[in-house]
Length: 229
Figure 1 (cartoon, rainbow, N blue to C red):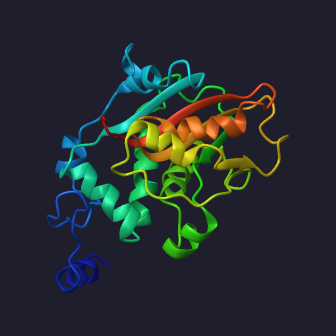
Figure 2 (cartoon, one colour; figure 1 turned 30 degrees about the vertical axis):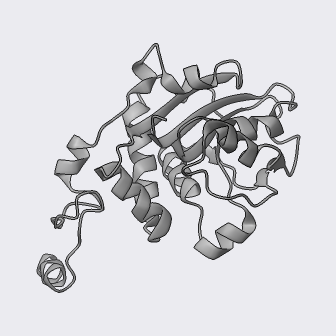
């Protein structure tokens, strides 16, 4: 089997989705060098967590963090582009696995009942074929054992991309967009809201508008990357 795998790698070489270098047979999606060099945020260790500070007064977060720091034209951007536009769903799952393994010895996951990806509108998901945030959420769920919920939070309105929008424009783009299919599901529950990238927090705030009247709900946030506005 090893000889067959070696032969196949010569015919169909695999490349690192972060640096585009060749992958060795024991490497998965991202080469070991990139795994060690990708810029971790470690926000969960930071008393001045920029996500919580950005959303302070707008969304009552229990906890929030991102796996990586986003750098323009950097390796994290390469990963996100492949995940979002090149059908590399395994990147999201691997990042979810990594996220949980990095934080499993902390208190971050204590009390969380559901992992909830930010939904795409049904037209956009049908066009793309998948939700990149759901891929990340699946990776967290399969390693943590926490239930994945992809049906309760829904996106009722189709919106344009948040990229290049200013803070107020981002909020205008996502307010009144989200809703719940069943208001009882998250009653007295702690959910981990999962997205691919967070910048101003407008999407989280938009989701909170749909959640805020749910009795006893608590919300934490996890994303693959944080992009400093």
